[in-house]
Image (tube, each protein chain N blue to C red):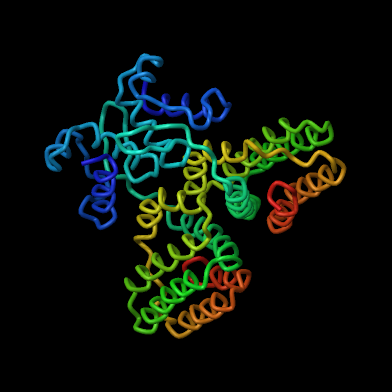
Length: 199
Length: 199
């Protein structure tokens, strides 16, 4: 097993709450549990630390980080600018096939929104944004989102879409979908900022 | 020596051309040259690979990557959206002290532009953007730019500012500085896009 796989296993465990904030992470224990040597475990822990999923006190402890008070605000701000930019870039040049994939993902978000399915909106939004980033064909966008995706998703964990106002939320998503279908990057960016998650 | 230091040494060597595109990187040789074990070297090489500075053909070779044809376009697009967003975020809430640091960095860019000093504009711009990112107080912006900074700088290496039209470039920088001084994030974002580097 490579460091990449250990990174992914530990990252998902932090994401889904199997590993809780504050929980101690001992490389010896983890290596034994995953049946690997300590090297890939240490490598994965360092990588998780660089994106704030793990915190380390040198020679004392390594533990699952508690998201900062501002983690949700910081992540939605960052996503608004990056995904907003990705809309402009992708819609001006992606193939018809890529556009269809983005629209399909948008339809899944709209369906989840209509059904008041909060986890569905969240999962659908992640997929939707991934399709947009991919369709930019911009290797910098793609590699940075791939590298930081785990940390961003973790910061958004506490977030639930405002299901009180389901109708206006669904309408926002529909307008966003229309802007995407029309390849209107500026309008898509505007709608994205208007939607609760990134408002 | 830790993986972090090896990463930084190898990254700078790729950045300044000491290690040339296509050059083979053997972990044994590098470990010997840097007087470290192979573990931190392998760790650093994997990290460089994730950001596209190094390319690996499994079990065959590891070498310094040749920047793709689109590397410059991809990087300037990404920077335009991220730094543009950072201006909006930072100028709406940073301290007066942070604002002074941004303005100082802007002055250095303007001075380099007036002097037709292309490397000075480049170095000044890196410092200027770093101050803006820092002033957002947004940990996601800060950690992502820290992680990807080396790769972004490397992709921009081929770029030289258009010194033919020094006067209008200096004027753009002056307008950008004014927008920053007035804490007008939207205007700063607009000027940034207008400047050659991010046009």
